[in-house]
Image (cartoon, rainbow, N blue to C red; front, side, top):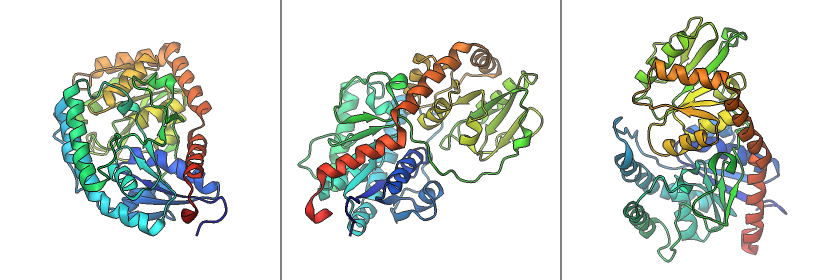
Length: 397
């Protein structure tokens, strides 16, 4: 039983680090306020970011899904929905239902890409909030035609018929009660569709990060540190780009050094005076010392960079990344290069600009200040508390 004022929050997350990471910050804040927190998803990833003591209810997830590296545009969007989001919802749903039965949450916090959380909440009549770790779904850029919108609506309707409550008609990607958006208008701009239940809370950096060893003495304080990362889902596509990034920094070795996340080993564990490549990096800690970040415009990496006021060179690959890249350049906080054609010359020229032109760092600082003012985990937790209070019923206390 919950104590007076205590509420139970169940976080439902996909097996994606960039989606678990922000939720972990909010969960830690709720726990610090005396609430109980549970998780439904992949226990190994959740415990890595939320801690080994996290109360986790396992859900079946998909076996490794390998997306063909060349997929772009609608083909990539179709793969995302038909081969990942839809099957993931079906796989997770039984585990989410078991988690609800065991944990008895007052509120479910469903990641936007863990549709099983939203659909289970509506099926069982549990109040729920959306955790939107990327603002791309709030942009019309991902679905530019009515036919695409209609196609996605059909897929969601099919999932609702089997996993949710067919009597509902709202889009399950957007809770009618509360949508937490982990950005601010300074980066994302004004959404084309006004959703009064949306709350822009800014990033929610995790309070706990996995311990990854790093030779901090390698960093030369007399040179700019360039952090290069293509995220965890682009290992099959990034070899050439990482190689060109290394060459671009080498050509500027008098003034710059590069730390490169290389999970696929494309650079063969390179480590010399100018370039250090490793399969895993303490990315958040490195952001505090970075002068620029080169990345794929994944929202998590962009948010972490701008949280520290670090300007970017963005090379979007697919999915929401072109949308986020456009937001970065519109805010003046970085330069966009073409992932497929970016070479040491174009990447190097972009680095020269963001490292030497003070306008990029000033814009990054403006976004940083908006992020910090938005409240992050504290603001998100307060909104969730208010939702729980509004929805409280005697039998759920």
